[in-house]
Amino acid sequence: MVECIAALRASGVSATSINTYLRGLKAYVRWLHAESVLASPFPITFLKVEAKIPATLSATQVERLVAFRPAGVIEKRTHVATLETRKALQRRPLFHRPFSTDCDHRFHVMSPIW
Image (cartoon, rainbow, N blue to C red):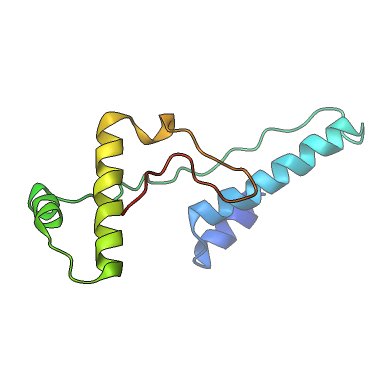
């Protein structure tokens, strides 16, 4: 397996893609163990992946966004949605916000934008 991973890396496959393949292999090995084909599942070690820090807006960019005066209807909707999202995130972190998944597409967490 180590040779296979080395060959994938040499051919330019990213560590994230290889870890995806390894996750599938791990699930298959665990299934083989659950079906009594393997006596015990063997350990699978994942590659280390560099954590990417998402780009954020600078203070100047945020000020420009807030000071922006939209011209058309679409710009107004986008601007208000952006500002409302910013206000909501200041009040409560994103992962604490409720999310509606009902089938008639009502979005209970979003306030009207006009």
